[in-house]
Image (tube, rainbow, N blue to C red; front, side):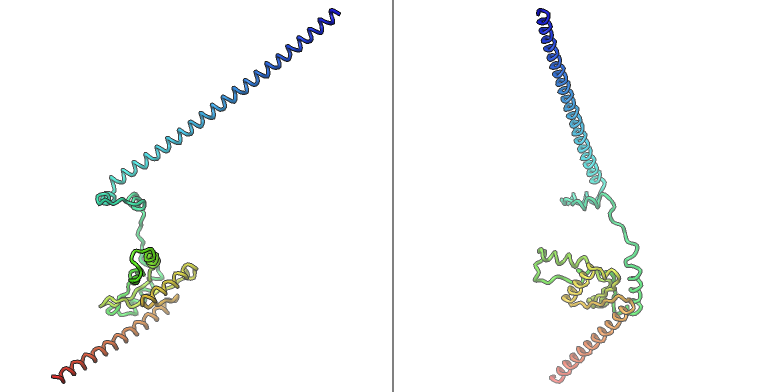
Length: 259
């Protein structure tokens, strides 16, 4: 009995010790896990701080580089100095123009096909009567009607539309510089949708402006059209001149009779 009681007590004590040991182990594991999590959080926080510091430093360096570049351009660009002296604040595009080379010259004024056509026109038209002007901006031969308020939104929309267009050749009276007509040599690009739209609108602009437009895709056919058109104009001008001279003569004779 006594031995059995001792064994039972020993077993209970051993079980209690075992439970306490397991609890201690769990506490140790929990503490270790919490310590690792805390270390991980600290490590991540350190990484984020370093990344943030790097971003800030790079941003400051970039800003400093831009600032130094801007100062360098201001010092070295006479154009910017001139604008600044006049109290003009240059736009971003103007600053870029002064900061780097953004324009290059074209080798020729017209394409080889346009040059060939222009030379043919020169051969078949009178250089003492007509002046052939290549690549003329539409806005330089047509002006918006006075009823469109100048510098209004509508005015700018219409002006920008026409100012981006050019006529291949504009014919001018060499003595009076009167605009006689415009010439367009069409090519394959005129079959594209945006060019078709442009051509339709261009014809309407010149129609409203009272400027005849001669156009064709075949260069030889277009030369013939221009030659015939100018002959007709010359004949009309001569007829008008004769009519004016006759009228002047009759008026002079009438005055002589009155005397």
